[in-house]
Length: 552
Image (tube, rainbow, N blue to C red; front, side):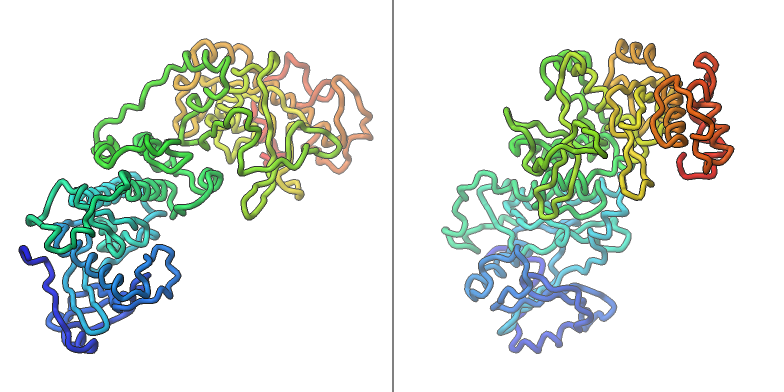
């Protein structure tokens, strides 16, 4: 029946006779098809292997949903075991990234499969991996799956639990557990040792499948694992787009644009293609510049042309803002009011004031509340203004510090419309301030001290638009607005422009430093005349009154 395999099968008279060959040490785990243990051969006790002890008749007590229908059926279970052994021992050649079968021992009631012992898990690898280690591990995983596919094998269970590292240094990855793998000879382009399927399987067992996308499941799993490496934690195979956007975002500080580009071509939605037919094939994935090391040239986009299209089609916002450093956008179907993940509760009020914002709740198991602003294009709010607002909030400013005016100025952003109605608190303890309206923001890159994640203005904005914003931007307008807000705090109410309040009406509980700051940034007559204002936001935040507080 063809050349011998890598492991010569041994027949045991009794199940207990396994002790004549191996010493069984600590348990490693329990899977759908049996338990695994660390073992050492009696003739070489210093070596360590992994032994899976598989009863010939199994009942699925592990609760593993990936277990097949063969559980509890001795005939089907034996066939599954036979198939796993043939795949690893005959069909596939040895490969550095596929677990090696060392030994197979068959007893009256159990089968003992001995393989290499791996030391480290993917779950521990995810948080620590970076660009280099992820590229190495992912490339090895692709090599393993590609070898399987070339020989007509679909693993069908490529997941975190079935990918281990040989040693704790995570340098060599191994694809393990071929318990539900399938052999599809019609997809094989190579045969190891002239393997003849009909010597091992009946003709019915190797009939061509009717599913033309039989290899796609493995590629879907590879897509999921790339996102897991990039976000630093396991990603569920079945989850909502909302959760992927919120909880499983790529760590853009660790990964290059080339990695982001590959994710955009194979990743799960919303990071990858909307249509599965657009996902790269395995050979195309392996040739991607992120994996080959070739210089990556991101596809050029004509910002001027896209901005002209934006005038009559707001969905152009998606390609304009396509950048995996922000939450990917969703395009709603025609006449669709809201995405399925949310349900509109009603108008949101802050105090007695209408906000023009809708209060929505998630339709997931935990209906967390959210605020949803519906922005419509109009003569007073043209599409370009909507684009600038989204660009600055999503891409130019770091999201976690966007509420701080100082950081806005440091990133070249002027708010231009600071007002109490545009400032809210994230909690009822009044400790976390948030700016919620940036509809009039302007961006002046030449005045920026920092660029968030190396933001490149020319990728998103035309020279004409940048020049126009530079002419209109007024950093002092934001500082003057802060002065009016400070006066409102001290007066305990909003003070109209050019209104004088009595000295006794200002908050006596405020320190003299607060009055000093008011004299520098407050509105006339409490602060300097407009032409005399030249204080910077850094000077404001370094003022003694603010240095002793948590405001700036």
